[in-house]
Length: 438
Ligand SMILES: NC(=O)c1ccc[n+]([C@@H]2O[C@H](COP(=O)([O-])OP(=O)(O)OC[C@H]3O[C@@H](n4cnc5c(N)ncnc54)[C@H](O)[C@@H]3O)[C@@H](O)[C@H]2O)c1
Ligand SMILES: O=c1ccn([C@@H]2O[C@H](COP(=O)(O)OP(=O)(O)O[C@H]3O[C@H](CO)[C@@H](O)[C@H](O)[C@H]3O)[C@@H](O)[C@H]2O)c(=O)[nH]1
Image 1: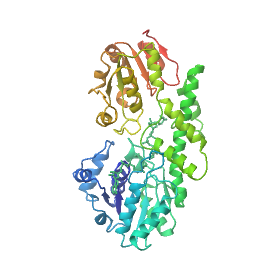
Image 2: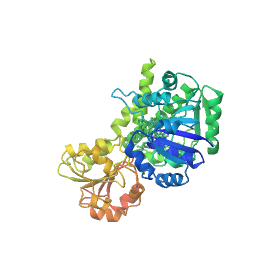
Image 3: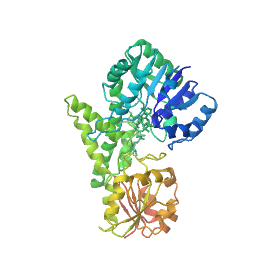
Image 4: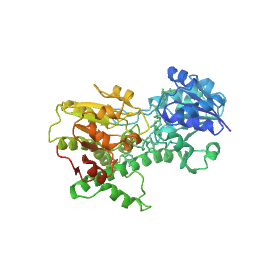
C-alpha cells in the first residue's frame, strides 16, 4: 500500500482520494481553500455526491485519510502526487492551466526525493511535458517522473464509477512510473491502458467528445422524429441492441450540461485549431447542443397558444443531471431567464441544487417540494430526470395544476400513460399527447 498526496479536493480529488484510501492507501488531500479543509477534517463535505460523506468519515476514522492546506507536509512521504485541480474554460474555450501551473511550481519547490507526479485533471495534450519542465526548474533536479492518469467518473455516481472503473489510462515515459501506477490500480482489477503521456491526455478528450457526440446525434434524430412521426425512444432502443452502437448515452432530451462535456469539447476544438486542424464534427455537436435546450421553451409557448406572459410555470429540476447539486452549464441557467424575460412567473424545485441555482439564476424563486411548485401552475416543465419526479403521483399532480400541461425535457413518462391521464404532454422526439385542450 502506498502514501499518496492528492492536490485539489473538488469532485475528482476528493472522490479519488477517498477511494484510494478506502482500498488501503494512506492518502493526504491538499487544498488552498482553508474553509473547505477545516470542514473536511470534521467530515463535512462541500458537495452533494451520494455515499461520499459516509466514506470520507469512515476513512478519517480509520486514519487512512487526512486533510491539510500544507503541501509540504502532504508531499513528505508520498510516492505518488496527484494533481486534481480545476482546468476551467477561458473566454476563448481553451483550458485555463493557471491552477495546474501554480501546483506544478509548488510541487517543484517541495520536491526532495523521487516521486511520480500524476495529472488527473483534464489537460490539453502536451501539458504533462510542460509541467515536467516547470517542476524540474523549481526543484533544480530531475529525480521524478510525470504521468497522466485522466479521470472518467461521472458526478452523481462518482464513488461507484471509481470503485468499479472500466479502465485506468496510464500515460508514462518510464517503466518505474508505469510500475508504480499499475500497482496503485491493481486492487481495482480493471483494464489498464498504458500509453505515452500525450496519448493518455488525448484519450480523455476523445472519450468525452465521443459521448457528447452520441447525445447530440440522438437529439438530432429526435428532432427529425418529431417531424416525421417517429418515436426516438424506440429508435434508440432499436439502435442500442447493436453492440457496435451500444445502449448508453442515447437518451434524447435537452442536451448535455455539466462541468465537463461543454468545457472539454470546446478545449478539444482549441487543441485541434492550435495544431492546424479544423475539428468539424465536434463543432456541430456543440451547435446542436446549444440549441437543443430551447426546445422545451418552444414547446411551452406552443402549448400555451403563443403567450406565456403572466403565466405561472413550474420547473422541476435545476441541476444539469440527477444526484448532484452541480449547476455548471445546466440547461436551467438558459431556460429560466428566457421564461422570466417573456414575463412568466417561475417557481422551481430541485431536490438538492436550489441553493447553488440561486447563485446562477437571477431572481430565481424556489419552493420546498414539487407539489408546491405545481400548485396552480399553467404548465410544468421537467429539466432534470430525478427519480423523485419519476415516482410522482401524476393523477395528484394533474389535480394541482391549473392546466394539465407537462413539457418533459427528459422523456420520463410513457405517452400512453399521459394520454390516459388526460395531459397535454410534449416531450423530445416523440408525438405530442393532446389529451387536454388549453
Ligand atoms: N467533475 C467531474 O466530474 C470531473 C470528472 C473527470 C475529470 N474532471 C477534471 O478534473 C479536474 C478537477 O475537476 P473538479 O470538478 O474536481 O474541480 P473543482 O473545481 O470541483 O475542484 C478543484 C479544487 O482544486 C482546488 N485548488 C485550486 N488551486 C489549488 C492549489 N494551488 N492547491 C491546492 N488546491 C487547489 C480548489 O480550491 C478546488 O477545491 C478538472 O480538470 C476537470 O475537468 C472532472
Ligand atoms: O443519454 C444521455 C446521457 C447524458 N445526457 C446528459 O449529458 C450530461 C452529462 O452526463 P454524464 O456524462 O452522466 O455526467 P458527467 O458527470 O458530466 O460525466 C461526464 O464528464 C466527466 C468529466 O469529464 C467524465 O469523467 C464522465 O466520464 C462523463 O460521463 C448531463 O447533462 C446529462 O443529462 C443526455 O442528455 N443523454
